[in-house]
Image (tube, rainbow, N blue to C red; front, top):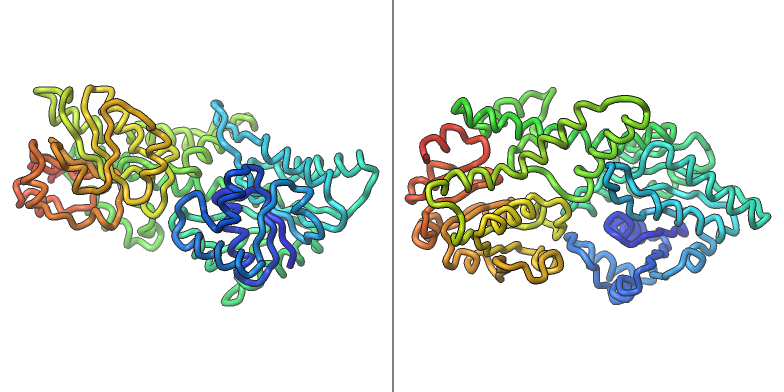
Length: 448
């Protein structure tokens, strides 16, 4: 099929590459000239495992090409995806400016039958809004074409997006137009062979499904972080609690890990957007607001533990090694990452920071081009040079089995802060280190 994707960011590029890889002809519209230039050289400007290879293979085969204008890319497309950004406004509301502009450009350029797919995460009512804009622009041109807008939310996890797209657990389509749904079924047929994954519903339900999914997952994380504080207070171990509840089939084991808080491009903004939608509807989304509040508080937890441990002499002049800056492993995404809160708090207290991340160093240099007191170093080992203590913020595989004896020799204060509960407290203490985790009540009490 002939597919156009407007927006070659994270969602748009993954979508385009995966559709191209099963034989479709895909045109990506991207207005950023620098990004267009990079993509034409098969250089992906962000880290996602396997994506560079996928883009290179399909571009070389002629199944993917990149253009700067919607009018250039729409041509004789049968399906056009809108995959532009919807960043949060200060109120929590999603900024729909890019979606509106994409819809207007489609309306000005469409020249035949077309299914427009709203892929960007956007509030309930976006499909209707996009349809109205396209219809208005066609009317202004004095043309009439069969154009139908469908909601098709993405459920991609950064770090495993290609597998999530190729072998996802559901494909949600929001439309009651049989012709549009039939075309979408045809497009998704290669990803729907093993068992039926397509779920057809009305557009508002589809739009809300995306927010509901992310808010539910964020709720599980904040719930465990709330329990982690209680575990510390009463001397329980949140890791044991996690195992004890995760085997319950009604609960399951996913997203039950206490830690330094969630971040990224989805959970923070989608939880806030859900709360905003509720307010707009005259409701009070108490749970969504609490989930966000718990997460904001949890992002301060590592610094609070560090400040408490060094309360006698303070943090000024001390040096901290920070392992992990991305909000999660297998990505270079620093958006709303807990590491930002930690680094800024440490620097604000007069400490120095030596930080390392396996893939997010370029992103970190863009975020902190010249931050006094912060050194972005080339390896985890180099981060330890001159450090009083080590803080783990991101659960990269490379951080899971360090040489604790070496850490004890190199860390001047012989203390580690395990922000993702990667390590067995007893093994850490056996090396002569003081251990602080998240919600490891008994372990922390023994360390103090």
